Image (cartoon, rainbow, N blue to C red):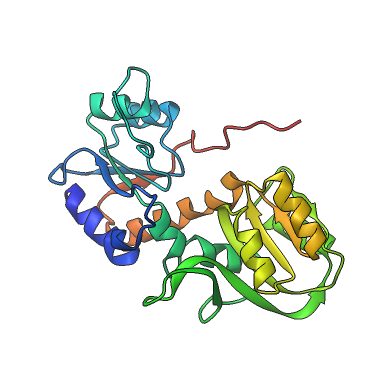
Length: 259
């Protein structure tokens, strides 16, 4: 088994061609022809994760966030990219393609919230009109719920230490989920007449605008709304490549602390 085998399989599940224009998904370090026996799956490739994978003999890391996102003018010492190259660890990063894919992060959020099957659910923000792919999904609830109940459910569903929320002041019948940094999608939700949105990285002014518009917003955090993809990728890769040892690093954790 080589890196190309894993890359091609991931490409069949969440095509790299669907990535958003700002994204940098794909094989970011290493060779397509590198032999692979041990694979790590994580949200971010940090120095701690590179060190852990080097000690455990991982050949490949599959991460959600790209280890190279902004333009690099140098590969400096004590950076994850330098560590990957030094330890001959390949990195496949699958960012916006898995955000938008069937069975991807939006669908996982949808199911964890207990909204039922995401199949057929409306996409919140369509990016690829010909494929009906984009960010987030919209759930039509069977009965109305309160903002407090929605926030408490999200806190439990994503195993959050805490959540921030704005109560839009009305019963919630239609809810959008959108992982990661979804602050801008608050305005999409307002335009679509949605009652509530669960996302992460919400800016203060977006909270204020949501309150004024009567939209409930639950900020469950960037990490907590996206680390859920790691178990999903672990299961997919384990089923497809049973001969490989696949694991989630201990250091795949929230870098923030809460008091």
